[in-house]
Image (tube, rainbow, N blue to C red; front, side):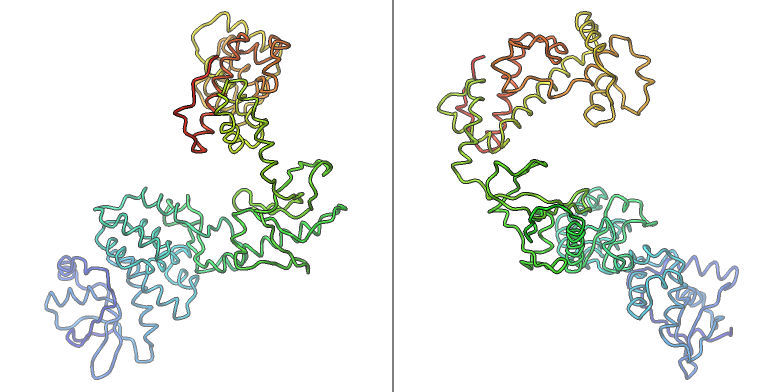
Length: 528
């Protein structure tokens, strides 16, 4: 260390965004206590020095009018990269170093050959932290301006830097004129703009790839925990997903020990077909596979049944996505899509609805078409009515007011049933309705309920959609109505049940027609 002339030091700052800080306060401190830490300079020849570290200290002693300053002098053998690293090492942890300046410095080091891991170790930062800092440099200039003007914080800036230029521009046009950028709006915008989501590493290369957001495991911002990582390299992302699908199909073929003849055809779900959008064939295990034309063929949905009675078709591999990031491969039987005549036959099966709720003959065909489009099969409509009827009656009986007749009926039903499991989602909702508390797996709340109320709860938990008479039962209810579990539970008369059933069926028919764009202004009210 040596004393050198203040006038002999040339200070050239490559800091674009950070301010000087309070130089007057620093000068006052140095004047009172002296300069505790010397500046760092590099000798350039002819008694001249270039400042490496200590820009604010130099400015402070200039403010004090000092002629010389203590300095550590680097020799000519120290190259510019090393000098830059020394400068950055001193500045990155100072409060006045703006994150955008850090981003530029870290990016420069990365481009010069240092790995992100090396940078993280050198500056005692986390690897995700370095990735996020470097990515800040990807912000469009307008968003950098909002960051510099304190209209958004570091967390917001880091989130937005994970968007592609197109979505950054969309965000700026939408929110750039706001005085303050709302964090919740940022999160919502980012979530809806995410593409190429990485719920897991597609291969080993993804772990250290710089073309990803590194949201997961990030110690800097807890807000990132709700976001999946995003890959910025779409071509690489598609190729790796395609490879994952190919491997899953290959494994399924290798493990298949059946005797069915399987065509070399892949039926891809829509969410997966995009990974093969630039090719019409793919090789798997030495076999050349084509892709199924979903407009011409569809699954027969055998559900394990034999193909007897089905139109002529073929077996092929159906590839689907489940749990968002997992691949399911199963063998399915495919047939040609139905022609118009077959569709009309299926529509006519909904004619029973016209009889039950009295749909005017002039609106019968239109109603059948709307129901076929909404439910496909009449049994699905029947299930929907059963579900709605059951839901209505359960809610009607949720009133905690004493009702001796109802409570007596529930106690009798309760004694005939086993205690059911509460863990399924729809059972938890019933439990909440009847007790006012969330199901936690504990029966403590039940012990405080009156016996009659306990029976009410468990009866509601015991009954199912299929206990409600369906469409096919409607015209023969008299035969068994009084012995039906649902009937015992609700206490409805035959006429009362038919009225409720018609009301619910009518509501679903109207919803189906509305969804199909049908005009309901002339859809007449029906007689009970």
